[in-house]
Length: 423
Length: 188
Image (cartoon, rainbow over all chains, first blue to last red; front, side, top):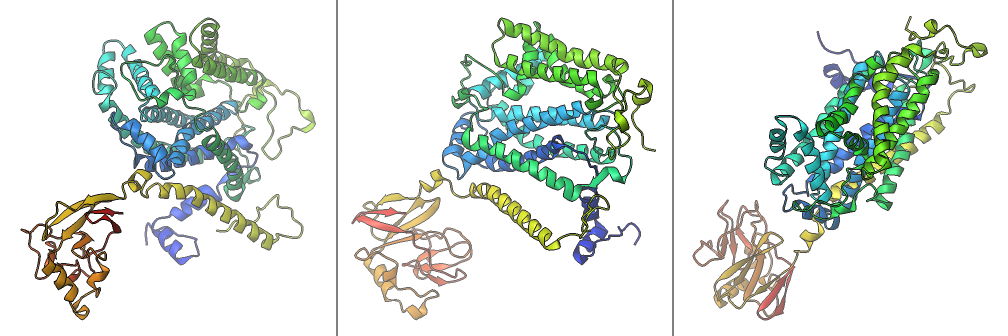
């Protein structure tokens, strides 16, 4: 019997399977009895919401693909046929298109949650970096999905985004030609984008799996940012957090449904209901809202290569964030200066979003440059410095005893600036 | 592996009201199942024939160019429809068969429209495994009963499209159709 798993399940069929392939034990360990910090707030819903969104996107996408034709002469009409003739096609398409926006809303909140509560700090650096990979994959997938309806915005979005690569010296144009499979965005581009748009979500599922593995090794961070000290600090994942996640999921589905049923084109651009015309660019061309901040950074730099590098850099800088932030205290709750800077950073990102939606004229250019400067200053200069200078508030003894007796008052910096360690 | 109250924090002096808990589980579970079903149905139904496919559900056929003894094949919903102009002899043979000789007994009068007994209209798909039988053209083999012969497994049909020799178990199906005039039918 060497190598067989000793299953504790009573049901004979479950036990038989579990002995040979302990998936039931694994699910029970990782999702039922999994010890989870007991002080989560609702911001800890968003990982689960993102997972569910990914599954809904894959499900609706598979059924949309059954009716979609990735051919430059038929793509637009096939999407209109989905809207008019396919049973519930309008629902599938609107759920999928708005789902992309919902996915980014959820993931951006998830990311800012991590930034506020210091979830990227040791020992969760790898977990965070895998998350950045997920963000990049999502962006590639969303971009290619937006090209598929083959309207004017699809076509010219594809043209502009792929032309970003032409900024690279020497090989730029060769790369762009290779991406296009021709000398302009055209039929070969559409076919390959469809193929990749179908592939990447499954790659995402794989990377999400790694994200979860890493999470379950380190355990979740929590709003206090201190380590779990004892079983008194945790609750079993089921039923406590399955229920808490379900509550958030219901609210999330209501918001999603609100857009699908009452404002299905809220996030879309009317120009994308004009079939792609390779000979005419629309007068106003803006990316989807979730790309606007990056677009603003791109346009804030008065140099083609510089702008492209800054734009990619704005995400790549997240990979080294765990080492840029020198403070050992995780939660912004105990970091008065960082807490202020965090909100300035949020404001800068929102400002960049607005800048990206407007023509680069007058004050928008100034605002774009100020916000871009702050974005990089925040990560590259301020975080390394304030980690050393800031005096954190006293950390609670444990999650179970969050209140420091008698208000505490600031302890000597050296004592509190260390992360609490497990005994 | 059922999770009971946690070792801490439950603090209920009289224990757990199990009946209430079961009821809550039942209601929550049912709501989840109904929700998933409501989400799944549009996905499943999107695979059913779409409006543009259903719109192709009727065709009109002009019968004037079909001479006696010959047939034509027209497509309806992606299926072949055999429209055959029977000779008087063929019609008589079809009508005079004893029903007891048939595999699926059915009088010829049930398979043609009254007053148009020289026209037999059937779905040209063998009821065995879906091949298209031969026999619509006069040069095709028509089998021992002068109707259609399926080349896949040798099933034979008579001039009324009734199966006379296996392995097909049933007569050729009849499409819904009607005579719009003496020389025109509408299928579907």
